Image (tube, rainbow, N blue to C red; front, side, top):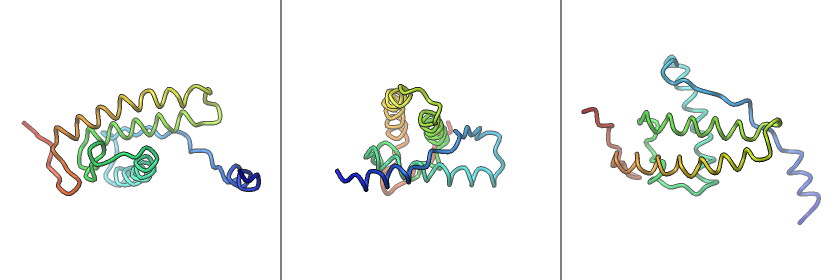
Length: 125
């Protein structure tokens, strides 16, 4: 390990912003677009970090309300677990609940039938 690189990495750390709880039902169209963009940034990071594929989070995730709600809640939980005043065990709680959330996301994506290249609308019957 290079001590200079470690110091540079530590000094570059920017704590996450205060957790953002999005009540999707109450957002106007402009706020919805802004929040989806913010969520997309986190999802891009999370899919790389946790090596998630389209069977968990399909590319068309913004078109599926249940998936948006799950991912939004997951992001909010992650943000809250990495605040300066968080308990040392909070990241472990996130990973415990991440396992359950990934299972739900897999189930929803499977039921929807969306693939890496094809989107299917939510069933409304």
